[in-house]
Length: 464
Image (cartoon, rainbow, N blue to C red; front, side, top):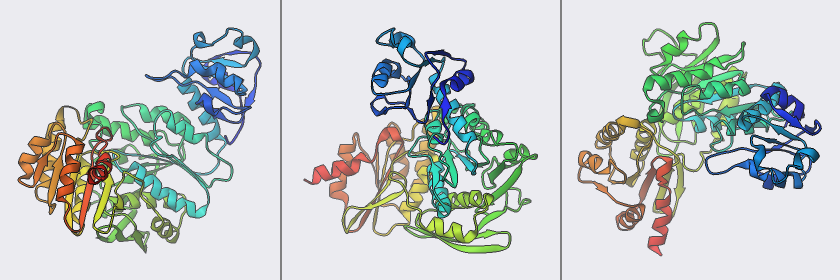
């Protein structure tokens, strides 16, 4: 934590009840097994766990105090007499308020990122750029929800030059809730697509939910807007009182009246990397990006726009983007041997990211094989989106498709004779064993629930 805090401060923020003496703490721990002397233990509760049950263990391990939502789970009522216990209605909200305390003591730029797709990639690209100027506090992994975001803010330190906070949403209001704690200086909205449309209920709800990233800006904050997204005019209309910087791969907005501030020219994408001219206010620098796909050029442009907003030079941006490395599961290239390369894009999938991944595969040399699982959380229109994807895939120079999931048969009928439906990932692995000929590139793509990365491990078992 960047600044210590007392239990009485948390009590006032959360309308809690404090038992025992007031104490100060410098670290918050949510797993009782990680507690060290002087820590504050905060009990989280989920569908399959209840941290309240481990409060006594945390005290025994040296916790200076505990924050609980259920006192009935204490192993002994005497604990209330001999320990500092704060009882609050909602420990997740308490975690957020403690995180907000840390945020208020951080004087460097805080950048919040959201969007239907590309959040993690853009966050890593922006982190690579800002790291050229010093240490950066940045969301780790997929910690972009009501627990992960506060935990990230708890990692804020004096010596850091900036913070990059990824914010996810599953419904309208999620980003507004987290905004109370994050209070970004800069908000970046990448896009509003169809990811999780089944949970949001409609595309318009997605547009509304994502636009909350702008409403949580500090009063003097700056909004970064993607003019290539069809909802950009709606977002700009709501930002008339805010400072704005825009970006576009196409250089112009949809109505061709608004010139973007940050643009990309001379885009050249090959099998594993991209090159483009980064342009801003009459200046330009050539960017060499170690990531394939024009969608990654858009992600890099978004990161560049946010970096420019905090005063980073084009030359620093170029250097930072050149050092970017993709995470596993996000268009991660891995050479199994001299003839087989995996493209692991299995972390998640929606119609936009699925199409982008197939386009990257289509750019590869050798035998191109797509192994596709279901795109989840698409609601009542799930079949429509899968069939539309199949129609686009049918016209791509991809040699073989292996499909699994409830819409696999209908997709295969559209794609044609080079598409095969399999009932399990083990069946796909067995088919790949006989199908990989010469130099081959295999794309693994599907929603997180499909866990398509398992195919690579299953193939190794088949080959033993």
